[in-house]
Every structure is written in C-alpha cells, then in structure tokens.
Length: 148
Image (tube, rainbow, N blue to C red; front, side):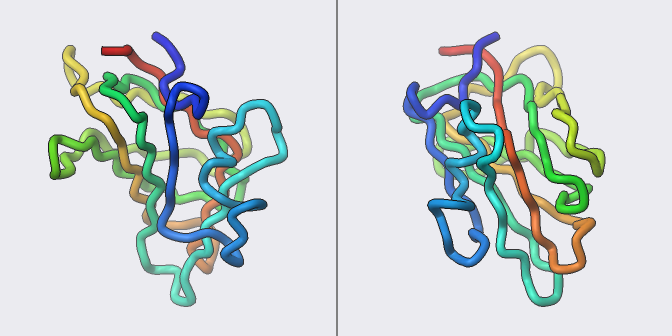
C-alpha cells in the first residue's frame, strides 16, 4: 500500500465549509499536510449543529483506496462518517465509520470485500457531532491504497 493523498502526487481537497472562511489557516489542504503537525482543516459548523459537512479528496488519478488514517481534535469530531467513492459522475457509498472522540491517529479500513473500487475521488460526510455547533477539526487525513 502507498499513501494516495499526497498533494505532490496530484491530490487536492475541498470541503463544505472553512472556519471564518480563512483557507490559509483552516483550509482542507491543511489536513493533507503531513510535514506540519499544527496545520488543520476546521469546518465552520452550522448554527443548529444539525447540518452535514463533508471533506472531498480528489486523487487526480485512478486509485484503489483501502485505508483511512485520520487525526481529529478531541471534542470537534463527527461520530458518524459515511465514505463515498466516485463512480463516473455519481457517488456510491463505500462504508460507514464510527470514530473515537480523541486526538490519536485512528486507522479505519475502507475496503468492503476483497476488491477495492477504482476511483478518482472519495468523499467523507460527517454527522452526529460532539461539538454543539457541528464543527469538525482534522489535523491529518491520509488515504492509503493501491495505484492503478
């Protein structure tokens, strides 16, 4: 397996929102920066804390994602994460993850069955927030898998 989510290999990220619209400090590409441990993506949340937010990772090439490694800030997570893979122009559900409310790097298998899908992008949809305002903070988001 290799790290698929490297910006140097063409990967890019976008998200449903960015805290204070400050992409330099809180933009989604910060979650892909493994060199600086203090950078992160912060979502803006919502006034009701009930709206879903998402993080979209475009690999820029066809890959087979197998594993997610993610580091949240404790207290600012979504306990339910649904992972989708892009199949042509549509999105198909890959798996549902339950993540822990802590600051440790968490490892989750994305593979359901023996054949991972070939895709150019994955989307993480967040629900059931620990933060009252529905904010999510991710310090690292890594997708590992196979090059096609």
